[in-house]
Length: 419
Image (cartoon, rainbow, N blue to C red; front, side):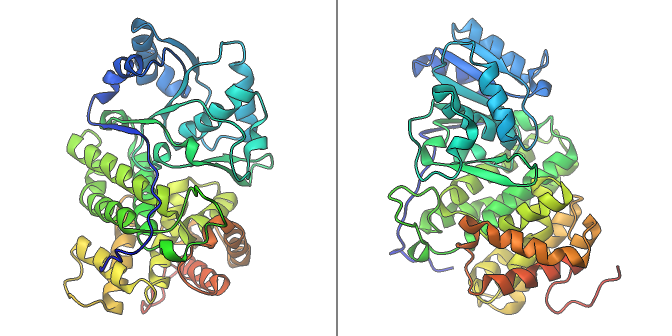
């Protein structure tokens, strides 16, 4: 693809990224060097159990003279209520100098909001949807244990509101981790389904940010320091490398959980995807996936997987060059000129890759019926911060076409499949 060197760049990332097998063991010395001598460790009971990374990290911090309180009740899809409960549970401790997050994206998102509530004591809901934070958060140090969400690199935290169906966001560039410690060894404990789910999430982040709205067309809504601001030459570079790594390593990491080269490849893929979408932003895949999660209660990677190939196909006209480049990276298209056939080959390859790691590629296989499709479209359109970045006009009609194709599992030109 041709990169527009005049495209504006607004790029944010952690001030430090440490990557490599075993690098988590360097963290106590680094925290001492940074003068951070008291911390709250936010994790879950699996990682906090004796002999597991959370317990080992807490012991190592104490041995280094760093005070460490532990909150180990994180849950998947954390709620505003859970954040408030965690704030209350930690209120008896002195205010820490930093918050450590160990776990998947849910644990890191909860920790992000705790960097605010542990300062103010205010309810988590008071930070939802506001244009800028009323005060500085505590420094966040994130240790992801999955290779997919890249929450450690992004400005947002996604929590569930009181009805259990609505996901809300706390967004600000100050919520990005100040230190991201990405140790591929931490992902070895992931079972195959979690590896697949996280890996396809990383792929969705990379592809979606690769084909999102250009920075020159992105509506920043007057924000001087936007969290997301459209794709630019820097985000495209990271997205391209992430896609290549996902194609090379996802199936191996899924089939051979102890394969450290594959684990490291997917950890890098997640990192690069986060560096891309963490500034470029996302659009139709995630907008529809949020509504799909409310209907099915499936995991985030699974709901992304169910719509990703069909969003790609729907954008074949607007993003033909980019989709053909994805097909070339996959080795399924060799023509130097972009064509509809190349764009379709990219979508077909991604769908086949998703199916090969056991994730669904048809909405009807997830228990949906046709009567639910209009509501799914409306839910996607309602996520305005994502839909405004959809790189095509008439989002309502385009979302409807995507949902219909995803329901049937049909890409353009394919024969109908049997139900």
